[in-house]
Image (cartoon, rainbow, N blue to C red; front, side, top):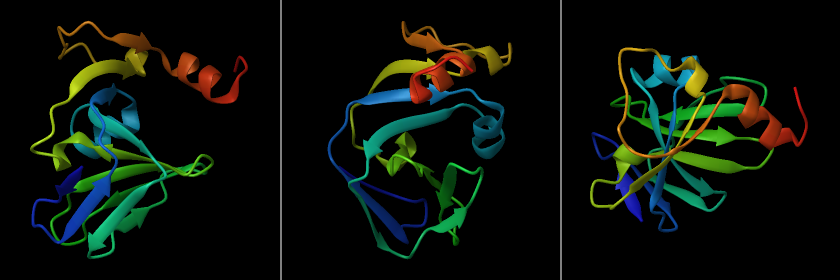
Length: 133
């Protein structure tokens, strides 16, 4: 699948995916202005055109964006080399909303009616590390 930033300076190419997850964590909401609509694409992602600008948002992750138009491109989970791309890049892709994470950080002023798997922040960290935090 191929997607691009708002100005078209950066194109993202990844294997076809059909599932979208939402992240309601405080950092993603600050970054995007709402939940992050996330497509887990793994390590096989290519960026064409301009080089994405990078912001190291934690010890284990960085966020990428277009330096020209500011479009949010990805969350890159460094230990797994996993790219989680913004669903908004892919205007022609048909996605299904499957999951919501950090549901315990979601503010009360919005809600989605889709039936999804919902995980708290602690559950996300337990799945990532294989142990209780």
